Image (cartoon, rainbow, N blue to C red; front, side, top):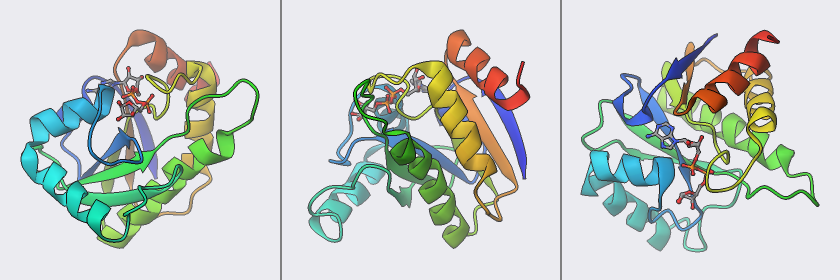
Length: 170
Ligand code: AR6
């Protein structure tokens, strides 16, 4: 597996699957989630609604992942995962690691070869970026998968720098 860092917008990635930093409602929100639904169009939300009326009636639990179409995005699939809200009082990093592991598991089932991840939980959910990067890189490295190309797509220079440090120990 090759891990690369990209500075940019996840909705523009030419990969088999892009991962969405969703919430358990699966019905959209701000940040990456807002951008994916806006650019991907209504087909994604339609499929999310169907998931909510069937196997995820209670919402998608934190740390889990599920795939839908990518609508008008260049990718083939969107894999929605729900990161944990950061807590200084409680260590939730196992749930953050689970987002990456479960997304790769879903990707394997779909035959995905290339995948783009955002920095899950590092925006609205308040995770300190260096720690979010360390957990993300560690989780991907420790997952056995047939995905060949894992791209972290980082939106801001501070998050990019944190991932660079986590990946290269710089
Ligand atoms: N491409 C790549 N990265 C992005 C983009 C983009 N287009 N837009 C933002 N980021 P966030 P979370 C970065 O808030 O913390 C939503 O309302 C952003 O700078 O998208 O997991 C959901 O519905 C940050 O580094 O996700 C949930 O309610 C990272 O992506 C909640 O936010 C993640 O920020 C999830 O919060």
